[in-house]
Image (tube, rainbow, N blue to C red; front, side, top):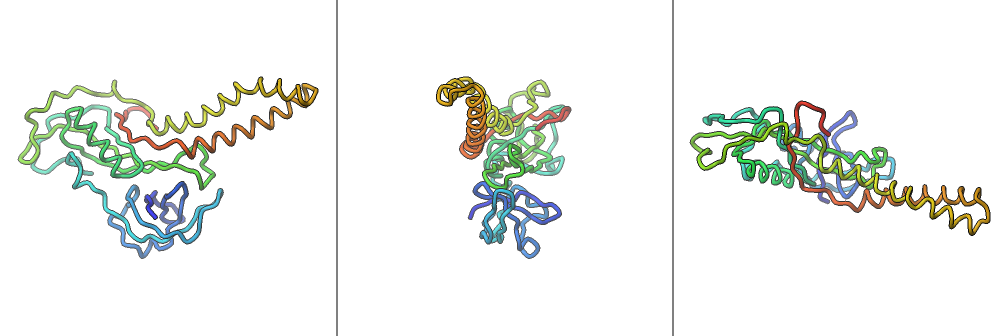
Length: 255
């Protein structure tokens, strides 16, 4: 089964697949391409399915290396590209790409950074985010990878700055929320608004069939709660993750 390495905690190493979270049982003996494999794609064999309140268990079959060498722009976790001169870097912002996998996030990051006029990405960092809508539930969750980097303009023997336009973006173009985080909040707010809007109609219909406002109010309350819960779970499961890009401010808290 295809999966995604989430990261470690005191219990061990975890993977995400098909809306569930799994504890990797053979993490100590598995061959990992990096010391911190968070965000890497993997193949797992499920040994115990997750429940609503408990993580599942799995065996790690394979973990793929990050495809940095195949990226459209040179990427490095370091602060420089050897033998190249740094010509320009933005102040107060980082570029960030998001996707369902590290490949999608890297593609979005490189594509949009290049459109801004950058020709390299420095200080690359991988982040894995679980949907916070229902943190206690271990099923019906969503997971996305975010890559952040410093978009720069460099010049040297391999990567030239000739032909690239002058860069001028900065903190004014940055946003303070992630596209996928914003979509997650919308998945919760929309069912709530629909339930509130439908409440008076349900109350009138319930009063007509029960014969009293008290009975109608009770029936409406139960119906609204049930509808809200079902709508939230349906929204959480059905809305896909977005392959997106943002300029992330480093001067403020960004989610």
